[in-house]
Length: 387
Ligand code: GDP
Image (cartoon, rainbow, N blue to C red):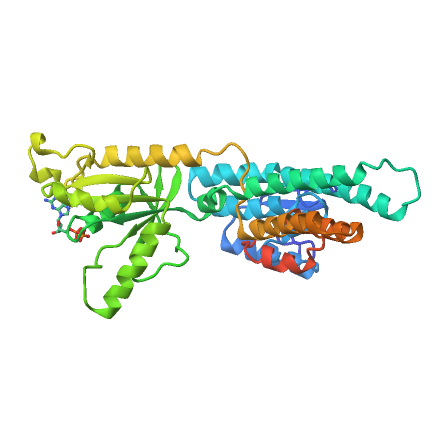
């Protein structure tokens, strides 16, 4: 590669030419494969700069691909998710979305809505024509069916969003049971993810780990003792709230104090695993039944615990169907569902049609097929340069 102006060599490399509209952005794209050092890049960028070219903004390639109709917005978001994926499950979910599964689902609903709207408007615009009288009833029936499907999709226990952000597992139990030690042991054995966790507070220690391919955010409520201190009590309240909000709980107790296991009764159900810690201090015969025996000190039993936890998470999160992954999608779907309900309750056909139109617009905002100009800056702000 040579600077044509000075005749200086820049580097030995390859230039690949992807003509539009079949390129990734839909425009003509040239790709340079170079030796990648800072000096080579600086020299090339200087030459390209003199030709009037500039560096891309973060997310600009994806944004152009979206504007040129190569991707819908859910796919553009999937690129950001794929770039940020830290575990297998996150990678799989992002790829499913990038393949367009989520967008297809929403577009299918949009198409159905548009048909309903057209039918209803026909009865409004041409009241004297010989339109079949059952049209209005059919529109109402289909609207109700669609609202129910959207409701069903929304009632996903937020699995898609949780998979994207990390599945919360709270470690709870009496003081000195070994909660902090267990958190450290788990974080050391499984790959600890170092990216910052949104919403981390000082009251609850959190660490993100990759457990059997799933992103787990372990929260330790240690350090929060039964205290009369007002600040500590507030901390305790927050820790309890966190434990309640968690998808799963590990209730840790000292295996030498089997009566402590009774404290787990406050957390009934399959979402709380009972963990008997400090088994290194016990003989085999003394191990409490019904709990997973571990030693946070020696690491004994930790493999069995992570296997049990992995199986529990896998059963819930091994997703085949596309799940909504963002609050943005959830809000738009809720708006669409509400508009459908309003449409069903409205008396006048004109009002029913207006609400159907609003529902259609809400769905369109998810994939980017309705007025989304105001959304674009927010969505593409999440991207890194070069994507
Ligand atoms: P927490 O208050 O529940 O967070 O408990 P810590 O993790 O601070 O542990 C309390 C005490 O128990 C510490 O002195 C730990 O070293 C000790 N400990 C924790 N796990 C084990 C274990 O598996 N075996 C033994 N022998 N001691 C442990």
